[in-house]
Length: 296
Image (cartoon, rainbow, N blue to C red; front, side):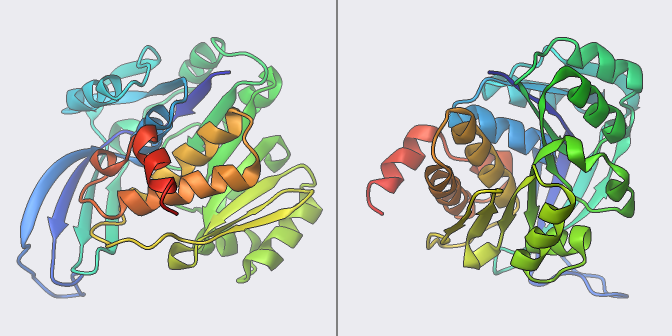
């Protein structure tokens, strides 16, 4: 079983700050680093480090050559990448003293994906394979439609949320992976249980995971609800925590693990990730996660 991540690729400009910049304020950064990132790249690397057979599709723009190398060096198949002339997608990330972050995103080459590219890439995959999507690239409706036609299982991480996402064919989506803010944005319900109940009525086959930060995470399927606590960690940088959780949850899910086991490994991997600076570089390998779980 293969996983195709048709996702974003960003150069991340990360600034350590005392506090997030306020309106009208000029603030001196404590430090600056340039890293490989983008929710797509982070999730592909998390999937690969967790042990999945993952293919990344997307666009490498001017200044983004390092991104392809980063994927390949971490075990991701890059045969589905395309090169375009536009500027590489990028992000400006502020990380405060507590490890929380705020992000300003520029789509760049991530918005250069075309319907023709979607068709060409997805013809290489088969029924039962997984398609992982985030909302940092163009042509999401075409991707969902093509996956549905080919019998692929669609996993959507609707981040950053936009109203246009509500026009997607949610009947074609197998898994929705959201944080509590995104769960409310999609459903209009502040409480995750209420959000699930509304979405389940509309889309009976849908499954959903809601990450809750320090409160852990909760998984909903038509058959059951599984809650997972957050593991204690010394927080340095939360940038890739959700992407790490996604990669480990999906990898273990495709391996046939029981949902509770998937949630446990995803939560432990995320707790390790937040204890380190950076995005992709903070994601732990599978052996490290399994060893850490022995002391739980």
